[in-house]
Length: 235
Ligand SMILES: [Zn+2]
Ligand SMILES: [Zn+2]
Image 1 (cartoon, rainbow, N blue to C red):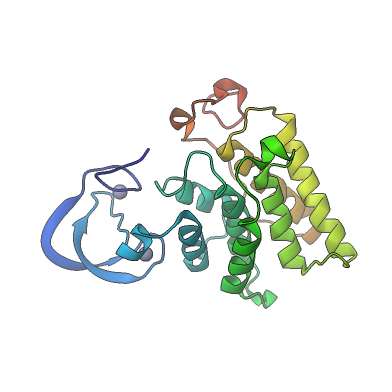
Image 2: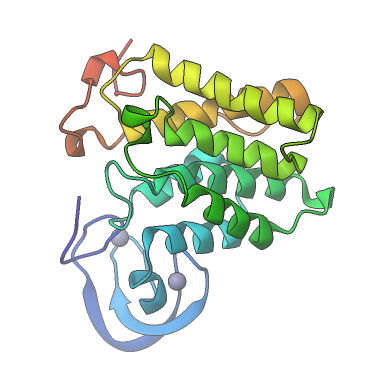
């Protein structure tokens, strides 16, 4: 789904007006004068248009006020900056979790943009293909990055260390149980869902879960279709 022409979110043909009119960027929320219109109302500023996948994830999550991590993940995944499969998912997972968690936990004294920057530095070290070569899916490691940041874990911590490693383990096992080949969308959805259950159990925090229906199967050459829980109509 790479739109060389048309809206990079929905693919619809862009309309150019005499304009310019004030528009709000879909990702960074800045308001900018532009004479480009998507019929669905999407507008992406030049800076977000030119940014890397990692930067787009960071800017979107720092400006979003959503508490729905799955919704945020899907919004980002629809961008043509985010590959069908790729190591940007190793950052996407902790970034949407941090944004949702901090947006819900406004009194928690978290510095959202600071935590997103730290998560990015950590996620950049989790290279592409880790799932196949190290037996550790990067989306699952992303949940460990999330937990270690919100608990302030270090190698010497006790409870924080336990929670962070336990969450990675739970996510990784749930991902492994579905079998390969890898799908960065499926594995990210599983990792995020496992984290939401974990937060409810250990932090008494209920973030919205909702039903996940994958809209990316037509882009995935190795899609398991009806064998994937997120494929529309699967059992
Ligand atoms: Zn659009
Ligand atoms: Zn922007």
